[in-house]
Length: 193
Image (cartoon, rainbow, N blue to C red):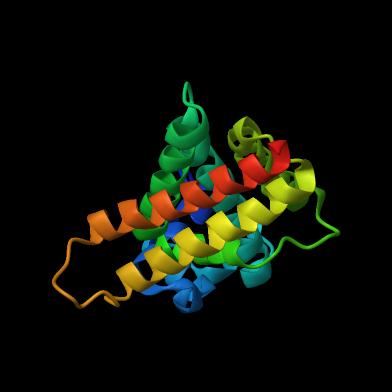
């Protein structure tokens, strides 16, 4: 079957991302993507390997786009400013792309080199930011888990409407990041003493 003019794998994956962001990761189906692109579902197999292949491609897109956002937010910054930029970019990404972001929350399979590379690029970007604190790689990985868990939890609660108290959410986020920075500084001090 010939590919429809204007439809390629990137268009299919971007349409899937829009559906996931608007309706949730679990709402992503081949039928929905086909409807959005005004094609028949079987035509999608010219571009992706079924729903599993589509989800894989969407996860790759999400990891790459997240890494781009994190990298841009930290260019020319160091230590606390870089971590603040990183945390803010992560939060913004989760809020703007909730369905796409959901694809990043599961660890990449070990037998997929492209997925491993995309996930590894994020780790290396964040480790680079954290290098200013003098953490060794193992401590840096612990710090990444803490940072990711904290910002993920905050943003997930935020998009779910979980902050009902009439208090500025941005100020709460600043407080949270300041607490993370205090923890990083304490870890750095322990390491140098």
